[in-house]
Image 1 (cartoon, rainbow over the protein chains, first blue to last red):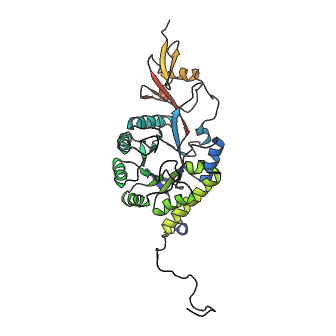
Image 2: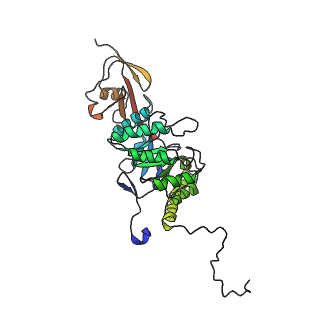
Image 3: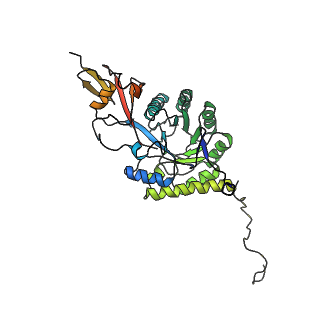
Length: 270
Length: 70
């Protein structure tokens, strides 16, 4: 489908709301708020994740807050449950987030299994998803790249499933494209790769596989030049999406095919 | 003479000479007007109730904000 020629919009639709950008970015690990703001602007992302944390009591009373740098009227703020190890803590955190963001329903659920791998605890994730969906939250769920888990999250009413490409913050790229492919083929809600992207080609490959979007934080924030990497990721996601929609040529591992005419050369034909 | 109110605020013990509404508590903590959310004993305290609801002895209170995260 030539979306450029037809003028049709190729939007990512999550919980009924369209987004022009398929790149979602985190806001952690930046040097300061100015770098955060510039990188996120360069990424073109419309959905940005934030964490919910205790405020420092009696300190830094006058300092700016993240939501002044990333105003919720300009960005869709996606509160996460990073650091939660139980369904109960994740649900509490997101109830606080909803109050903080004045009734905002779209959330990123992640329930971690252990502090070393940050691998998701899927039984707790499923339990939390069930409660949250019941309370009217629109849940985007970080999950293992297990197709059955992804299907169960969808059946519970999650608005997107977000399997890991590799461990959070590892930058190891997509270590199991085959599992991702199964999830993409079998799940109807948007599938976003969340975690493990290291560089632009990883993001492009995720989109070429057919992912609906990519969520990343460290790959941008911990690049030598985060603002430039943010732009690279924007272009990679767009390039990967276009390549997916264009439909790649078939792979022909044992058969070369010249691009220039065979006839009319000034050299003898072999 | 009112009894002092001992609470746990963001994991640390705090004592106030008397009970305060949540609005007064935020004033006291220099947090008034900030975009934040409050939980008391595991339950959300809606912003609309900050002016009337008051802290009570033994409360476990969490005051949270949005910070950078992925």
